[in-house]
Image 1 (spheres, rainbow, N blue to C red):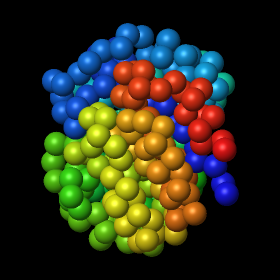
Image 2: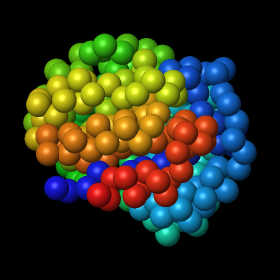
Image 3: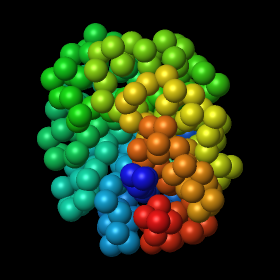
Image 4: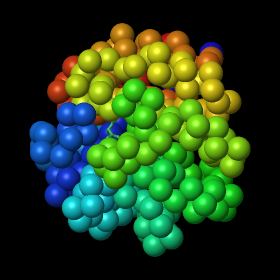
Length: 241
Ligand SMILES: O=C(O)c1ccccc1NCC(=O)[C@H](O)[C@H](O)COP(=O)(O)O
């Protein structure tokens, strides 16, 4: 069986590594230097880093220079997310040397532009499907943006390479992933799915890994690592069995 990829998360707000609850601004717990966190995950054996500029996502500024610095220092693959919505922000993100970017709001608000950049950049573009129920949310998860499955069908028809699927109700809560949502999305697309939000234990990772044959390729892990629910080494060992 193909192994589940793990993407430890570094979410950046105001220059700090943070975790939010339900992605809500104002719920930050701070975990210090984003570069130190990223380097720690790399030293622990991560092959990927999921790096989010929350200020860019919320429209409260950006951490672009810091995100670029972190990405440039990493020897591992980096997925960049947060506020990538037009030619300028996409060019800046891709120029960091990241492996791929994750588009969210743009897929809801400027579908023609997203179709164009999918055609231009292929596998370097993933789309984040951030949902409450089956309603997508954009602008830092603050605004409704349409139906999950209609949007997924449209993006599939445009050749989107991969989806990062987050149940906002689970994100940052340590309440476990929404396995039903992951199964439903996998049933609706042939493209790989990266699971995000809610992982709390090695059991959760085992449960996500069981969905690899259905199309889940990876799992993003944030809060659980910062809260020391398990170590990244333990998680990597778990998904390599
Ligand atoms: O990714 C975004 O653009 C974003 C926007 C607004 C709020 C949060 C956002 N991302 C959060 C993440 O990607 C988390 O790192 C990830 O879901 C990990 O969640 P958890 O394991 O539950 O801490």
